[in-house]
Length: 152
Image (cartoon, rainbow, N blue to C red; front, side, top):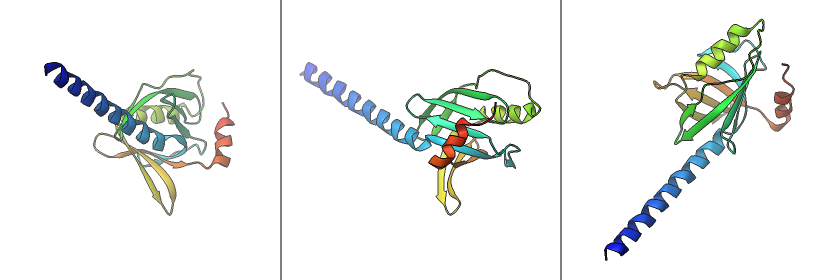
């Protein structure tokens, strides 16, 4: 009887863990895509080429704030988001302060939400107090080519 109870508890635990993993992948897939960054901390981004991309297969994010290409890993569970410290090759640029603002803003991100309205599909990255730290617009597939051609 104890073996049967133990087996049942193991199967129940495994099935509940699979449910959690499934929910994580669903959320992550919605976050995936190429996004044009429109605002940082409620201020318009000075560089119209600013982008962030989330890859749900590798759990990597890639960002560009007008100077260096940076990347890191991310973890998403039920709209809670944890971004690793961004890294990449740092070269000195005229607009390095814009990049520091962008990368610094990413350290405050704790949640995300998608808004689909007449303005299109938008991504909000929020801090622990639900303040919108970054707002981005989903790029169409035609616009995706521009992400690869962003000047370095």
